[in-house]
Length: 330
Ligand SMILES: [Zn+2]
Image (cartoon, rainbow, N blue to C red):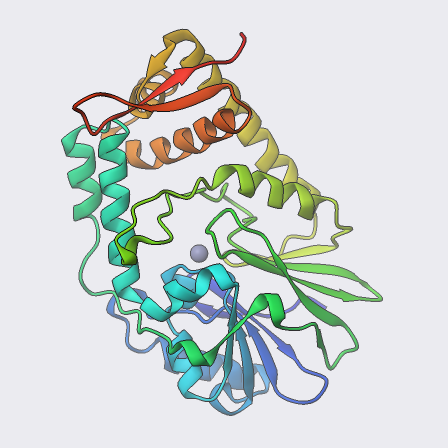
């Protein structure tokens, strides 16, 4: 049987009935851009699926610390649900919108350091409205995924959480295993119609520490580990159920192999360059509005090269800029 999600805008919330009563929900959902009726929509959909959102949902697992997956965590907690997230996500869940603002600020500053022109940085800072809501979730309502589960489900299957850092530092997925196969609630780790972004992450931004967490190297390792599982279906955080998981893995890997080769070739040709210059070399005609996103992926692939010793990020005297130096063999 194809499982039915609760939908909030284009986010999927996946409900599972627990063997000892109640419901476990994968992802909290959110209130998209000032939509205060999202909770009512969740209640109505839950009712259609045969349970009461506020009364029956005992556990809400947050796949990662992004507003569209975690925005309603505090609301669920107030209704009596236990919130579960990876330890690395807990700070962001407890900070809510303030944490998102700090990330956004650091991201813009990082793109400037990595050579983005002022109009690219200004465009990034100006794209969001102040309408977003993300209520901080009390820390004592959150349990660490590392110490939670597995859960026995009413249909005899077992749900367990698997840390999968990459899309964010506190990213996880849920594996649901039964006699008929293994389903993966993938959050944004694998998506049916797009390649998920590695992002630019500053896990300690709120404490005033702007150290960036290199995300693509762990992201590639997490996806490689998931590929080794005998998956039957993927239940993604956005979009439809995928019955052929091998296709998602193949697309993900082909995309990053191709992008990685181009970034490598561009830096090897330049010898030293900013991440912006590498991005421009790889995508000479990319419109300005898409440069920030493309730079994020370029930086990810430069991080991959740095990890194997083929590239090095260097500070320049008297400049906040970061230069990347090629130190590999052609
Ligand atoms: Zn998402």
